[in-house]
Length: 259
Image (cartoon, one colour):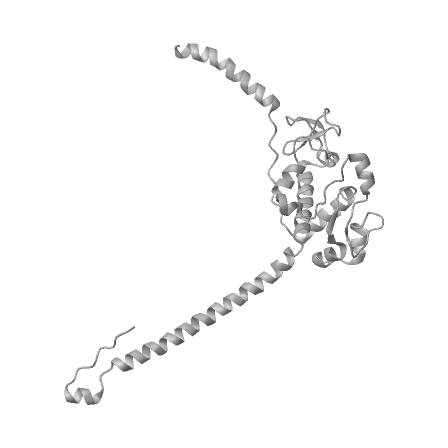
C-alpha cells in the first residue's frame, strides 16, 4: 500500500479513535496547590472538617484538648469553631454527629474513621480523591470517582467546587473560584495529615535543638581529635629527634616505626 493510500485509510480511523477516547477518558485531577503545612492551614482545615465532614466521619484518635495544645488554641476557641456536634467531649476524640444505627440505616455501612487515613493512603491520594468526583446518575448517590470507582460517598464538596461530568464538562458551577476551592480541599487534607500524626509540630520544634546539639558535639569531637593527634605528633617528633650525647659520639638516630 502506498503512502497516500495509507494516510487516506488510517487518518480517519485515527481521528475517530482519538475522539472516542476523549469522550470516555477520565479527566486528570489538578496537582495539589503549593500550600504550606502550617498550624494556620491545619486550623482552617479542622474548622471546615468540623462544619461539613464531621456529620458522618469520626477522627476518634484525636482529642479536642490535644488539638488545642498542638495548634495553640484555647478551649473556648475549640468549643466555638470546631466542637460543633452536640454532646462533644473536650477530653475525648472527634465523633460524628450521625450515630452508628443511623449510618447503617441510611448508608448501609458507617463511614470510615479518618484518624489514620492520611498516613495509610498519603495526603496526595486524599487530595486527588476529593477532587475527582463526577456526576453519575447511574449510581445510587448520583456520584462516582475517577480514583475510587463506584464509591458510596457523595461529593459533599460540590457546592464549593461545582458539578462535573466524567469528561470534565462543568454542569453546575460552584460558589467558590477554582483556586479557593482547591485551597479549601488542601486545608482539609492538611488537617487529616496532622490528625494521623499529631506530634508532627512538636517534633519539628524539637528538631532544630537536636540538630544544634549534634553540631556542638561534632565541633567538640573535632577539637578533641586535633588535640589528641597533636600530642601523638609531638611525641613522635621528640622520639625521632637526635640526642646530644648521640650526636657527640657520631651515632645516627634510630628510625621510629609507626604502628
